[in-house]
Amino acid sequence: MRKIAVFVSGNGSNFEAIAVAAQRGDIPHCEVALCVCDRPGAGALERAERLGIKTLVFKAKDYASKAEYETMIADALEAEGVELVCLAGYMRIVGETLLQRFAGRIINIHPSLLPSFPGAHGIEDAFNHGCKMFGITIHFVDHTLDGGKIIDQMGFHYDGQDLDVLETMIHKTEHQLYPAVITRLLEIL
Ligand code: GRF
Image 1 (spheres, rainbow, N blue to C red):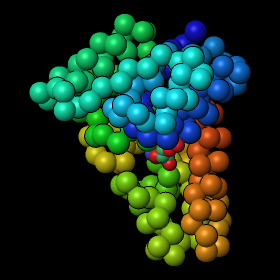
Image 2 (tube, protein in one colour):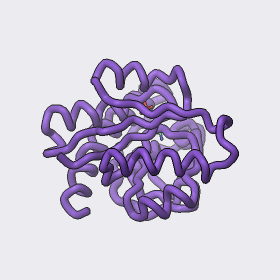
Image 3 (tube, rainbow, N blue to C red):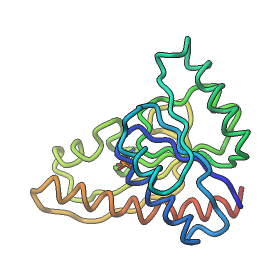
């Protein structure tokens, strides 16, 4: 089995989509070995429990520095034999420690067609801008905020006025593309 980890901070719908795809064999020979979460009480943790996936929960403020908690995480990832790290709503900038120890093996999903609308409010920002084309991006993680090399994107036209409808469309697109991209990456890693 190829081992991957999913990093979360909140709801965890992408984590669940990936975990279910792996369990069903839609991502072949793949297991989500660890769900890493920086927020005790995050909804993603209930999903992990239901799906029987091991969690690593930490609070950044319990550590002296980013290097210190990232060393703890990287050690745990190595102990599990994790080959690929998938960020899915993980609300922290990844630091030098993880970037070095998992070089070229950390990816992120972002709910806009990058490089437009990076940051924490990609969907609302694009909606408020009056965009008619929306979409999502999966990219490698580097030092920049949502600026790493793009792996894939999926877009669609939406001309409605309902942000909730748009958000649902975005998340549905995410849940479809993320497992597919992970499948492709595991073939070449
Ligand atoms: C997704 O929209 C993802 O693109 C962004 O954060 C959101 C996470 O949602 N980075 P969920 O926790 O997977 O439901």
